[in-house]
Length: 96
Image (cartoon, rainbow, N blue to C red; front, side):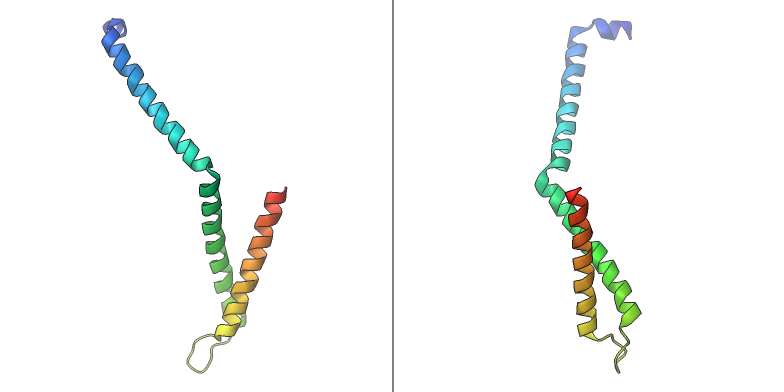
């Protein structure tokens, strides 16, 4: 280890490698905090949550029709309510 620390070429290579790794890390961090990416991830999460809420609401309130499928109007109303409630929750969290 002592010989390696005295070798200027090895030290330069190590510094360059560290610089490249740091540059990659900075690029990844910049990508994570990019407002467009944050908004996109938030919308994806909102859509997933709304879908889960819609499924839950649908199973609770939508009796199956004669074909065994739930009424589409009730399903759409449930989805609308779920999206509205989820959007309200997200909006209130952002206001704080």
